[in-house]
Length: 421
Image (cartoon, rainbow, N blue to C red; front, top):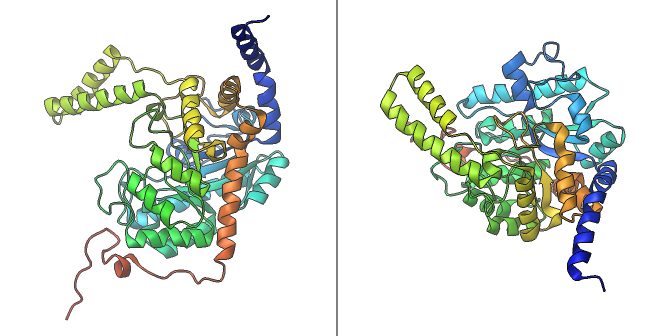
């Protein structure tokens, strides 16, 4: 009689041997549809959006994204982040966001055989079947609309497929997870923003938001929400990750958590290192004051004496395992945050490496169907659900409510001044 242990061992070896074939079949059926890539901002910083200066159809080792590696990674769909930093506010944030969106349009125009602008799940599937990268845009931070529903609608008309409600700082109508709570979630105007996004068919993205904002948005939204680039807080306890109670709500409402490759959100060891680095930098700032060169030298010396640990593919897979356990296989996607990160997970250094993660999942017993859900079938389902909600709200007029009239604050979040007598 063959022992149980031997049978298990043989099954494990067989699964490992089959992993590449399973991954190949899954990617042939469902290419990767990633939730978040910051190439547009990198093009702004490095080349003023000039695709002659940085021709992404050729290998670009200074970037994490180029066409050869998109092909190697079997990327068939991409939400391009049209990020602007939170220190840009008001009209400056709006115009910079429009410049980011224009860059995506220019990229698609420059490389028509590679990219296709799409708005719907059906359009995305047609583009993928044609061998192109279905390209959508995600506005990363509610500061990009300057507390204006009219601006939200304008960005949607230019091509915004989702909006992340906050970035690293609060907006006047929603709290960020990395700022001091002010609205304790969504304000009344914030709820109006979510409803208008539902009416438009824009996906509500809750990465970067506080747990209270997450809960409020899920409660208000008629459509499933997304987390375009977040992991599981139970695996790596940082505020940017999703707590289990919210994962359960994501499952209940049919949303999706798109696992990200940000090392500090993946690895508890990297997260702990980052906390130590922050504390040491704060201490050194007090010591060096205005001596910027001295501060930099001291921080660099500390880093040299304290090497940063590395996050691993296995740890990313641990997050996916946890989301599957709590929320289910139908609620997982991928949101690498490539070209938006300054360090990388070992083995996931660029957009060509998605198959390595899928191989790790296959070794853990994920089936071909499981992998196709994670790569693109789940996000396409969520998009179709949002489109159905928008169709059901088609008869509703656009909201013309303002933050001044709803929350009685200005667009900067200050109380509305009394009317002059």
